[in-house]
Length: 248
Image (tube, rainbow, N blue to C red; front, side, top):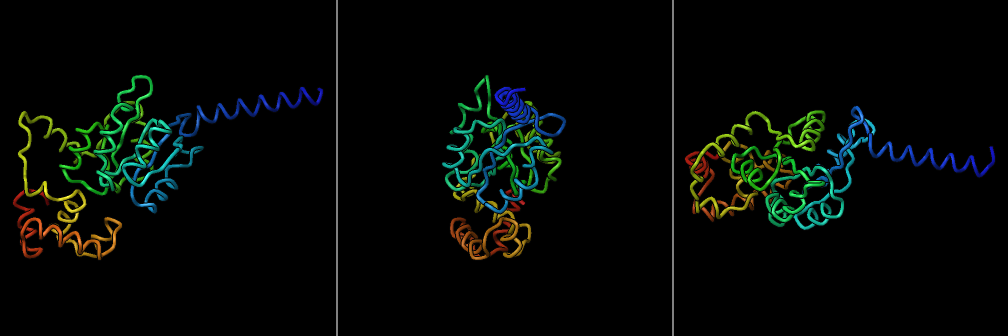
């Protein structure tokens, strides 16, 4: 065999291997391209380490983003099959990402599907992103194996929820009446609602900070803002307020 022939054969073999790698991946030949959207870099790094071993899981992480603008830019540029989307993001939250990516979601040839991955298990958060077009919602307590399975199910067009969260969605869409508008609650940002809910559940500031990956000082600032906006004096009044609205 001549050197030229051998070189051509090697190139063809390499090209075939590359194509096979892109099309096959791990997990029984399955392959999915994913973008991670979360405002905590350490969390994105952890998810990447957990599910991003393409040869094993079949999941290829093709991009990351920390806020709404970055998310829209990266998703538009990479056109992944699935986006893992946090609910609470700087710039308008996961719902805003869904709104701005609506055309990509409707693409008949290659739709971009969204799976919400959030620390929040609040009904209004779940219902909000599902109404926005997400195909499912799982919390950050999910295992890596289950998350990979959820990603592939969403890629295939299935809806994916944990049992409790599925109940929220069924209840919401079974109702013929729109939920009443709560003007007091609407004054709060998504992050303030999250802090409010954890305070009402009895979490200490340090526990909230750890749960939400923010500083204790930031938690204190959010609590002060909530008390001011709701015209409440202390966390005990805040707990009663949240309980009366079934936010706990």
